[in-house]
Image (cartoon, rainbow over all chains, first blue to last red; front, side):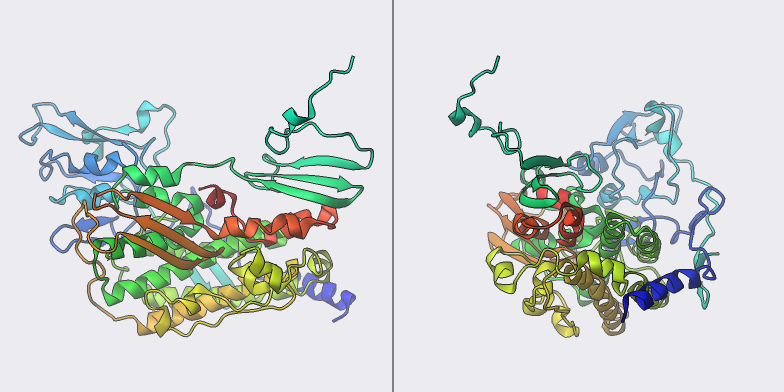
Length: 165
Length: 386
């Protein structure tokens, strides 16, 4: 193949793509649809349930304050601290629950694997940015709130290319 | 007012800091470590006009002490930090560690988990190669070739996100299988996106690989003969571009690779063009492997053997495992002394071994060809520094 025909072919390939659909996620307006409700772990079978590893969800009625999540995190990120919870809440015998610092968390999900009581799982919420470092520390009270997320964009593929529909 | 500096003193200084005899022909040029054309490393090149007379790569700027960190954490807690060296190829860099720990703690892996691992590893290889290719494009001033792979990479990242729950640093492999089963309906989505991905990467031929401008830049630059490729101990795509048919997936198959039909791509030329083409051909091979694995995978069953959270070494106390990562053979040498923590974890990444060839390839090249030769070595600075 000659040089001229090669260059024309390359340019032609680029021009053809003017007709191909744009493969861009317009992020704040569109958000990717994620699998399921988030990453969970079934202690009875010892296998996780597929899902996105985002911000944690904590069930206060399941948590026994056993420290296993914070022990698991010690070797990874040291993001989990066990804190005293107010007596006015319904709480476990030791009255301690995990508090997670998202400035340190690496979202590996090993704390979820460590929990034998199904008290901790990871939700689809990944928009955690904050203006202060303290804003990244989530107390047990904040962790029990189920995030409301509007995520519906999925990759659609047809003859004219892929797009986030 | 010239101060006399003793010559023997200067020789003890690290490379690049030595005071040199001023030569009116040879100039020393530091490329990096901040230069966007070198990654987190420095290449000290000596140039005579436009020609490179000597090149000395100086890695080590992003050394993180992964190997030392592995000695104070137990076998499971090592997983998140050991995949950090190559965050977009994290399944493949973790693969040898997981295989080794399975030998050390003596557990079996369910059949389905082996196939899931192969699919995740091949998807991850495509993600890595697309990223590498995008940077190769922008190094050569071809910005379309930056946009296309960076965009098409999203198809594979989306699949990995559905599988593992994270877009990069998946922490997915675990001794005894994988962390979680693939979601329902994943096979159909995977097949559809992999087929479309293959169609897309075929289009790179016209605009990049058959483009006469790229060929003029890369053909006959940095030629590595097959004898030199073996002598210098290069691996992966660099070795295969020099005409040596070596792929760990074929020569020492691990997990279920022996049941799959893996074809190795070999090119004879050994120049930058051949080295840049081999990873692209490998992506087609990865698509084939994913399709085969999806077909042969057991449709149900366990994906993880139960393992206590703090396992101790019981079986072999010393293992060396090797896999084919995106950059060549990646090995891990793990020594256990019966405690929950490994005694020693030695990582042997493909990047570092490919970098050894760089001074030999750059000698006699034009300075303008340096990025084309350097990045064609399939080198990732962070992985080489560990």
